[in-house]
Length: 572
Image 1: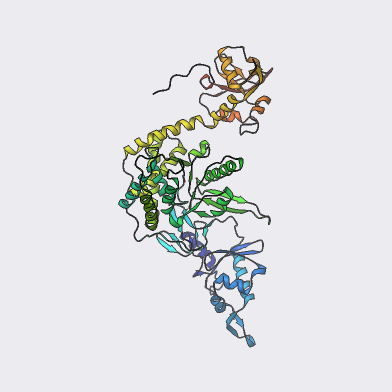
Image 2: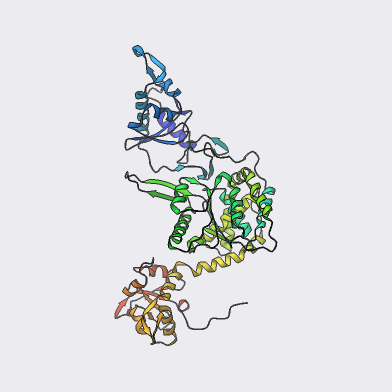
C-alpha cells in the first residue's frame, strides 16, 4: 500500500478530511516530500480547471490562466509557505527565500490536483447553518465548524460534504446553555398572544425548537401564522426570529427565486412577513411558487436544485431550513402542503398584554439567543429519540405517515427545549391536540387526490341544456339516480353509465372525459389512477358497453355518488 493509499484510508476512517493548516500532502515515491504540510487542499481537476480549498476554508477554482503570483498569494493567505518550499532563484541558481518561483508552485499544484483525479462537481457544499452528517449534527458558524463537541476550522470535508468558509457569525453559548426551567419560562411568554387552538402555543413552541436545528431534522415543518390586522402577528414573528439571532433572517417582500438564491447551500430559518396571496395574478403565482419551494425543503436534505448555465455546466445546490410566514389571509394549501406547514390562527384577547411588555419579551429573547441555540443543538440526540416516541403515539391515534411526521417533529421540538430526558407522558397535551387532529383527518380525506379528481368531474358543466338550464355532471348523475332513464343520453355521451347495483361506470379512456380533464393533472386517462385510491372503487372485471363501444374502466360505489336526498341535520 502506497503512502497515498494510507492517507486516503485514514481520512475515510476519520470521516473528517482536515482541509488546510497541517494537512499532509501526497508523499512522493521515496516518502520524503519536503512539502509535507500544505495550507490548502487540492480537490481535483475538471475541464482544465483546478479546484482547491483555500487556506481560509473557501472553495476556489483556478484555471491555467489564473495561476498568477497574486492568485497564489490569496490562495495561501500569504507567501510564507510558497517562499519556504518554492524559493525564487537568485544569481548562479542560489535559492532566494525573499520570493517564490511561481512556475514551480503552479506545476506542483496542478500535479496534486491531477493525482486527486476528476473533481466531482456534485460534491455537496455546506454554508452557514445547522446540518446533518449521518446521525451527527454539524453547526457552521462561518469561520468555525462545530462537530462532535469540538470546533474545527472551515473547509472540512465531513460525511462527503465540504463546509466552506463564510463570514463569522455569533456562536452558541455551549459553556452555559439554557436550562429546562428557563425554557419553560419562555414557553409561558408565548401566552402573551391568544391562539385559536388549545394546543397551538405548544405546537408553535415546538416549531421554535425545531427551527433551531436547521437542516438536521429528517422532516422539517414550516409555520404560517394568520390573523387580523393589528392582532400581534408581527410581534410574534419578531419574538420567534429573535430567539434564533444570526440563525434567522427576516423579509417582508420576497419571491421564490430570491429565497432560493438567498438560502443557497445554507440551513437557516427565515421569517416572511406579509405573506398574503394577493388580489392579482402576479402575487397569487408568487406565493404559489414560494409554497412549492417550502414543500421541497421539508424532507431529507431539502430542495436539491440543479440549474443550467450559459457555459453549459449544470450547477447543483441545496436549499433547506424552516420558514415562518405571517399574513392576514393564508394562501390555499394543497393536501401535501398541510403535512408540511403548520397553520396557526391568532384571535383577539379579552386581556391583552401591553405593547411595552411584549416589546420587552422580544428584546430579552434576543439577548438569550446564544443560550437558546446551545440548548437546542446540544439536545439533538434527545430530539431524534422524541421524534420516534411521538410518531409511534400519533400513528396509534390514527395519523397517516406524513401527518405523524409533521406533528412528531413539532412535539419533539417542544420536548427538546422543555425536557432534559425522555419525553414524559402528557395525556393532557394529546387531549388538547385531538381537535386539531380530527380536523386534519377530515380535511385530508375531503381534499385527497382521489376525491379532488372525482369532485372535478361532478363540478364540470354538461354541454346539453334541459329546460333552459345547464346542469353539472354531478347534478345529472344525481337526477339519473332518482329517475332512471331521464339523463342516460347525456351520461352515455361522456362514457358514463349507472349500473344495476347502483355503482357508476367510468371508462379508463374516453374523448369527452379528456375534455373534462384537459389541462389538469388527471388528463389523458390519469383520472383512473387517482380514483383507484378511493375506498370501494374497483376495476371492471369485463368490458362495459357505452357510447356503442365496449371498454374497461372503474366502478365507483354508490356512497361516492352525488344524490338529491336530504342531508341529515348537523349535530349541535
